Image 1: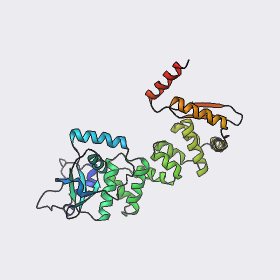
Image 2: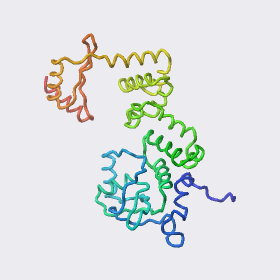
Image 3: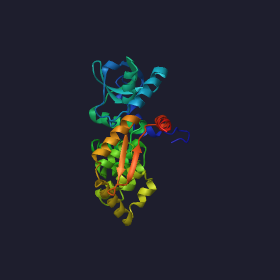
Image 4: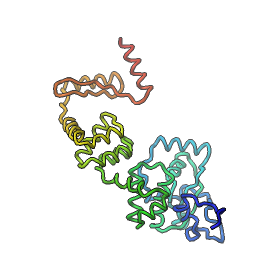
Length: 300
């Protein structure tokens, strides 16, 4: 091969290789070249049942809606033709939903023909490479590509342009208890925390360590230290004691109700069996904290 030949981009080994195949181009090679964009009415497009992304944050959609209203859709959607005037999303569901919120009646899209197997692979590869999926969604996408699309790890590595160790590290997350996977999905802990928890030998120890991470805001390095025998024992003990915390008395519950109403925010009591404890006033953001401080100043 000539040294002047252009290097194929990483994506070319995956989704773009499919898009550039004339067999998947509804227009055919003799009409419009593969990759041409058409404007399609939103009412003719249905959602993709294979989309690995299951959660769309409302605030992020609102921000994208505002951007679309100002600049339009910069990156076209990709759809497949289902029949006369019927299309189904292959990728770009965030843009599709935001376009609906923005009141658009039509959107730019690449139009392809793909069977369900090909469409699943295209959707998964596209989303892994272009969307901000959380680590659990990425892991589930890798698992589906391996199991449902019958790819080997080497083939998967080529398609998504990621190392086999990167793929293996994500797949290992699916061995964690559901509660820990949910914590990763909901961004309560990072993938680094989750990988450190994998070193703990039992589910009980992993869940006890998760409780400490959430309660004490432990760093990844802190969690790695929990794998030491003495730390594991302490973590399990802490998890057990957390379950046996004394319940609040009727008077304490009345105090909480009064304070919550007066301060306009959540208030909680954390106490030990000996009766010692903390009164915790929660706030949602810096402005909310400032409001509470001003209230306390006025009460002097």
